[in-house]
Length: 149
Image (cartoon, rainbow, N blue to C red):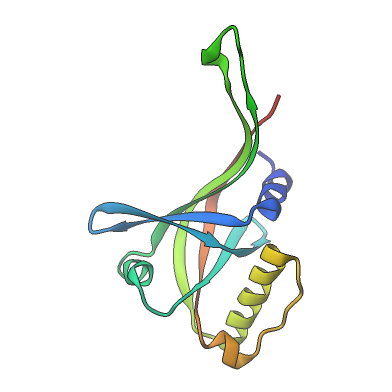
């Protein structure tokens, strides 16, 4: 799928599922996100509490898989039910998590998150940015898929 089509899917998604490994077991969390694409690199931005299971896992192993999708309509094949399915668009990829400590980068990330989630241009203060944990997934390994009839 072309990068413009992938960008269009991401632009319309609100939740990104991030999968990680916790003691040899998969662990997946749904997260709101912001993003930017620079050249062929997708950067996904997230925020959360400064402590918790997810943060502990990511500090131990920063390799993740992510997925986001747009649901469409069901495709029902009444005469041949095995041909039924669902229209959808998705983006899936792998990357590495980096925790953001620089306050100006945290402010930028939080602003991109608000733009994605609420289509609002918000400038956060240093105090606001420093009350949360902000991190990003950097990915050069992502693809998109779309099924429509």
